[in-house]
Structure formats: structure tokens, C-alpha cells
Image (tube, rainbow, N blue to C red; front, side):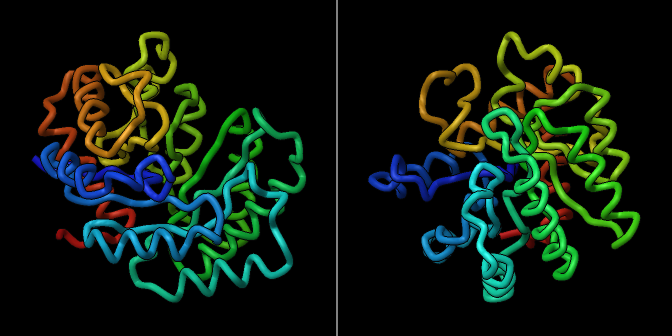
Amino acid sequence: MQLIDTHVHINFEVFQSELPSLRSRWQEAGVVQLVHSCVEPQEFQQIQSLANQFPELSFAVGLHPLDAHKWLPSTADQILALAQSDQRVVAIGEMGLDFYKADNQAQQKEVFLAQLRIAHRLQKPIIVHCRDAAPVLRELLQDFCRHQGPIQGVMHCWSGSPEETQWFLDLGFYISFSGIVTFKRSEMIQASAKGVPLDRLLIETDCPFLAPVPQRGKRNEPAYVRYVAQALADLRQESLNTIATATTDNARRLFGLLPI
């Protein structure tokens, strides 16, 4: 059985003393490929170095919405140049809107649209962070697709309602679930997970955050994506192998990943 963790942050300091053992554990869990997200372009060289160390790691480049205040006139050119500098860059992101922790909505929207234009130009998918902002983000995407053309991507660490989930499915997006889907009080997210077509489903850890049950409260890591897959299998009354095969195929299709 093969699994792909489509959203990791193993460049964080909490992992640096044990990267070889971290890799051994994800390999033992069946994780054959990973997509490393990017919070800000300054991380690029560090993430690139990890990809040099681990051939199964692909990655993205972008600016997180909570860092939108760091956007400079040169940032778009920087992201564009970095994305073109390495064939292992498979997406732009993570990018999006977060109105839960920040109120600079106009700035976030401007930065989101700037990165959308880069992704569209490069024909790369986007990794979308969306918190308390689904209606606005939907409107921005609809308007962009109407005037600029279609864009592919994934709603990462998804926590929206079934109605909101359908909005982004209708736009052609994939939906990725994290350890949150294993939490007892996540009934709305679990309902959303049941309704996503099998060919649009992805799994992730978003490590080191949001460790799934039964590891909840611990530092998360890529090996734990297996618990997310199992939770989805139980919720959807499908086999673990069905979820593993579908999410692996979906990740490879969206991000253009070649089997290792």
C-alpha cells in the first residue's frame, strides 16, 4: 500500500535533529512521496536542500496569507523565478485567505490574486489555505476563472461545511483532509469528507501540526498520514486500500508526480 502526504513542513526546527529516523518511520508507514509546502519564499533553499536529501520530496513556493504583510513589490518576481528554477516545484503555495487570525483582508486578497496569476502563467496548481474566508475565496476564484481561465489546486487541511466543499469541487478543486477529520467533535468536517468524490480526495498531515487520533496532542509527522487515510476509509465505508490507491493517484495527477 502506498500513501502520499500532500502537505508537510519538515523544514521546521522541531524535526531537524531526527530527519533520518523521521524518514524511516514514514517509509515504514507506506508513505512513498511527500509534497512540502512553503510559508514564505525565504524558506525555499532550506526546502530545496531537503528535497536533495529525500528524492521522494517535491515542493511548492509561495506566501502564506498570515504573512501577507511581508509582500514586497519584488515578491511576485521572486516566487516566479524560484518556481522556474527547479523542476521539483510542483505548486504555488501555500496561499489563500485567513480571516480568523488576521483582519488585513484587502492585503490578503491582493497577495492571493498575485500568486494566482503566477500559477496560471506557469500552469501549476495552487495549495490553498482557507480559514473563515470561504465565501470571499470562492468569489475571487470564480472571477479569476471567468476572466483568466481555469486554475487547478487543492483546498488543504479542509475544515469547511458540505456546502462550502461543493463550491470548490464545482471549481474543479481537490479537497485534502488532515488529522482534524479524526477528531471526535469534527462532525461537520466528517460530513464533508463523506461527500467528496473519490477522484478528488487527498490526504495530508500538515505536520508538525494537528496530529490525528490516536496521536493527538503529540507532534505530528508524515507517518501519521496513515491514520487520516484510515479515518476516511471508516467514515466513507471504503477499504483502506481504496483510499490509499485513490489519494495516491489523485496526488500524482494534480501535482504531476512521477512514481519513485
